[in-house]
Length: 255
Length: 198
Image (cartoon, rainbow over all chains, first blue to last red):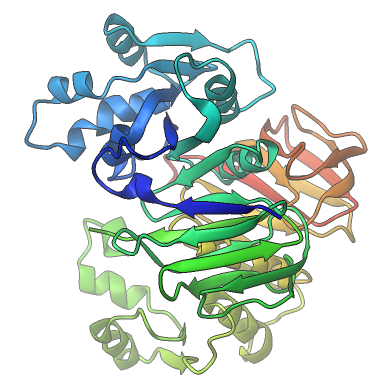
């Protein structure tokens, strides 16, 4: 079984050109995490999902209180705004289109969520993007309406061969597919120690870990019984192998 | 609580809204808060020895097993602040719904509520449209559901299979006053709570 290596270097300031990972950023319609500028700098393509454009417009200036708001909005201009367009304010749409942001109206497609449309866009259509080692960062994926959150989590399961990271101010989540043995390298300056392994959607008959305070050894996990929450990372590397897809979640440190 | 009554005296509000019990592993409650409420007579049940269950789990077990003078024949536990924040906490709270599946437990946040629809029953959900809806969903969090049938939703399910990796009913809409649900697996029902209330 192949090893899949994970590392939250996208939370670290700076733009590491030597990294082989190509990052894309999708901004959804929840409060912008305070580290969104760091994610933005790592990303080679930046997509707003519908009302996410409102968030960018309203809240990015708040993260740079000493800078001129219009200036911030110019600096943090998305490449694409995509979705069913039922949340974005007209003034926001006009502002970004005048700056050259491409708008892709998908209001005809009511069957897929805004995040799903954006992930499909990045996977299929984003030009000039080296997708051999693609990682899609999603800001504002958690909190708010639970059905939205569940729909966003389902996108991880439906696109299980693409690295997609859901991010909020408090934590991040990504899928650990059962097809791989996983090594998670902990960036302890920005994440942890609180973590969990969540068997969303199906029972996991057997999970084995190393590097957690409460490691699992061939342990069964399912809703209604054991779910690994309020666990703690010990040290720098976690390994996980499971008979089912699991969600890995780890807390993000406040500054 | 004082912030929700900005024209009242803060101390006054705190005395009006005094909990009966504070329970859990006590690693978060501030000393001044603990002292304030114990002085008012709030009972404190320190469970710091039990690291295997979440704070919510401890509180639900407490209500189920220890509350005197409570008629538990038709009990419903409302949980405020169950969602948002760390996802592992949220997942742990959702798991409490599955572990205590014979009790009515409602998880609430500013934006929505969630409760379990056990597969053992046919469900009728009466929509209080002044305060909730229309956005809703049916979420097979624990395991796939081979068959779900609903009425009263914009996109009703008809013996439909649901599961993560496939179809999950989100961004659905309630139509009218009553929704019915029957499923071969336990489902989570979630509905939005309207802003601008009270």
